[in-house]
Length: 275
Image (tube, rainbow, N blue to C red; front, side, top):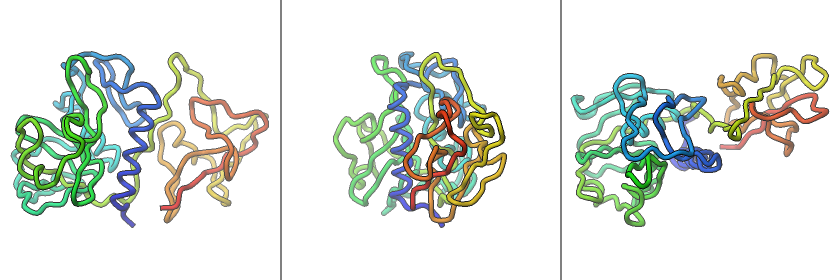
């Protein structure tokens, strides 16, 4: 079952929340973004943060690559340039280039590219207004996470009829890379450690250093299932989204590779959010 538009928006909002809560809202030189380490820092680098690339082949770290990085987090697909691709073509993993935007309805996850140039990914759309997630670059801002209207919220909302023709600052939309149906979120928001924290934990051992059971709801979840803590694949449950490993079936403390297992913990439990 594919995620709904509202669910995709929720996931992207969780990405935003995770980044903002970490205090690291800039993409900077010298940090290569991966699905485990999103490449964010708390240090500005000005408007020319172009030494890093995502994917590895030829994409500067600014808005163009950032939108594709978010697309990668959502779907696991690495997208490249599509200027030379025909309208309607599959550009990878079900992503589709759309050049004819007549009556096009923007959906969360869609990538919008303009001739100025600028690139952003649709955060939400209700048929009347569209909001975006983007990397906003200017000397006084640095390469900074931004969301809202195109170009860092210069106006409060971007209207669909206007966006089909132009965007703020006169940029003309040249195409959309349409997001395919998303069956499962590819990457959970990262649990970033405090600055200077390097400690890790072994989730296959409890405080007595004996093998501990990991549980998926009420079913035993065997060794290897905790790899998600160290960047592996999250467990799945039909109709639910995995929230993480906790010390109790409800409530409790979330445990990540950057936290300690509380004293007395004998097992970790998967917690879920109903879709």
